[in-house]
Amino acid sequence: MPANLPPTYYKLKHQHETAKTDEERLSLLEEMLRIVPKHKGTEKVVSDLRKRIAVLKKSSSAKGGKGAGKKGYSEHIPKQGAGQIVMLGPPNSGKSLLLSNFTKAKSEVSPTPYTTTMPVVGMLQYENIQFQLIDTPSIMQDFISPAVLTLIRNADLCLGVVSLASDGLLDELDVVLTVFNDQRGDAEVGYLVVANQLDASGASDRLEILTEFYGEDLHIYPISAETGEGKDALSQAFYDTLDIVRVYPKAPGKPIERDDPIVLPNGSTVLDAALGLHKDFAEFKFARIWGPEWHDGQPVSRNDVIYDGDVVEFHL
Ligand SMILES: Nc1nc2c(ncn2[C@@H]2O[C@H](COP(=O)(O)OP(=O)(O)OP(=O)(O)O)[C@@H](O)[C@H]2O)c(=O)[nH]1
Ligand SMILES: [Mg+2]
Image 1 (cartoon, rainbow, N blue to C red):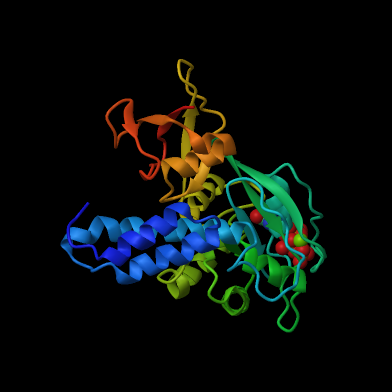
Image 2: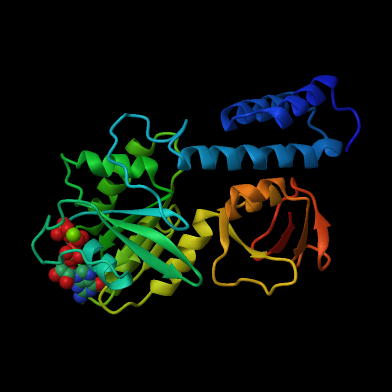
């Protein structure tokens, strides 16, 4: 522990250790961060506080607490899997075909615009985890379904879907971006763009124009919902943008379970991993860890931050 932390810091730290709710913990951590002197010797303390604040904020919005959908419209879809990804786009961009071809769910696909009238949920497999992908009614200039607005505010990630078969591509993306920026407010929602229908004629010329206009500000992923081209790169981008880590639990004397990782926000601790496994594990006696950042089987304390791919063995 670096020297020169003020006595109030330790008082707050003690209150934090005995706090009963996440809301209390969050406000105590924020107060600790505010009063910590910022210099070389306190860098680790400061970065640790920031990480814990980020984790608490994330889990509170996942539970629908403070910071989750503010405007009271309650038609949100419960989150499942490693992150909720909401598609947004103009009519006929291919959102429903994307959902139908990239997941096991089926959403009606048709050349008639505005075919989709209600959100449709599917699960997209990525390695050993799944993302929750949501198809939505298309966005019109002057009307957006209230359900879509709620979905944007609660999403972990929004995916603008535009079509490389459309000459109105730039304007359409502009509308989608405006809606997204208006709605997400100060919520932390990531944003990626899919340029769909890469297999359509003239698609590569339009992709060039799109990249020229938006390539510096946005992450654009060219795909074809029809042929599946670009699907892997897009799935990888979901993983990276969601800023999550996977840790693998291991029972003492048993092999590592690689099929069912605990998925947590980046910056989570050993204790978060224990809680992710089961609430009873919160009281574990000690834990050992394996991973590139650690010595094999090194004992870790509950507040140590874990890394993607770590294996943790809990002893109750
Ligand atoms: N060639 C090609 N056609 C596509 C692709 N994606 C979608 N389409 C076609 O474009 C049309 C519209 O696709 P949908 O998936 O229904 O579009 P949507 O965005 O859901 O549109 P809404 O009707 O507003 O719900 C359909 O005829 C699809 O077959 C693609 O990647 N390549
Ligand atoms: Mg549709």
